[in-house]
Length: 349
Image (cartoon, rainbow, N blue to C red):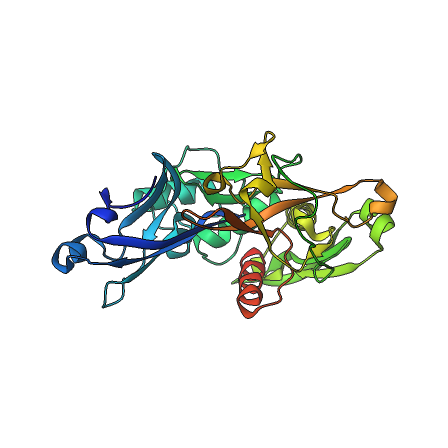
């Protein structure tokens, strides 16, 4: 049984619920949820279904999604909610005195004290990366997680997490599930990050610059070399180690892998977990899928007869026997994908 619970109230007690869909992303965790309603008692619904209300999607008593309700339409028929990680876009990265900080641990702790609706187990955030200008918590977490070769988000339990990409599959797709086109839009084996290496004057201004480099020689030998420039100067003064960790994290998160051009829609019998059909409502972004019988980049060199990819986004509709998966490294082919990639790139830089 699937329920939508808003501020502790099951919305099916207010009217008919349909078209319930939710998604997860990696990074980010819970991303978006939406549903439609009919037969609402408007006076009761308006007191519960209001902007900022806490939303949970529960399947069989287990939470699979959590977020915050957006402003409902005047007709009170269609509803949308955003995942808790998006709340980091509304809080500045500051310490208890209100001064800017580049410590994610301090910034999260302060934001939670100021009302950020996360559960945070102190000390679990990655180390911070300096920035000469104030920034939002989401921006600080983006670059800090990248520098640690991790991704961050907030799960269905409301907890902040920061974790590296998986290295082994937890899900298996049977042969013949479809063809995933491949692309090299963002493919790079050698990254060159230009950064500010010295400041001088009053007030201090950049006076020297340097370039940090990192490479994946294995990928270059397999697929060919590709250079890419990364501008880190907007973050202000960095050490060579800090600049190097950022671009090394970018490389570790998939720059040296060939990307994909399509999402994959799989039925429950086509996606297996521990040898049995996967429970689709519980499939999350951040898991690795092994597609058996698929052609993988460099297959002739590795001798593999499968292709692995990390799920970058899931989209599932309650009651459906299929789920849509987008791999990490999905090459932007639509306007929404282009805008999403641009926003992530700007936050990391």
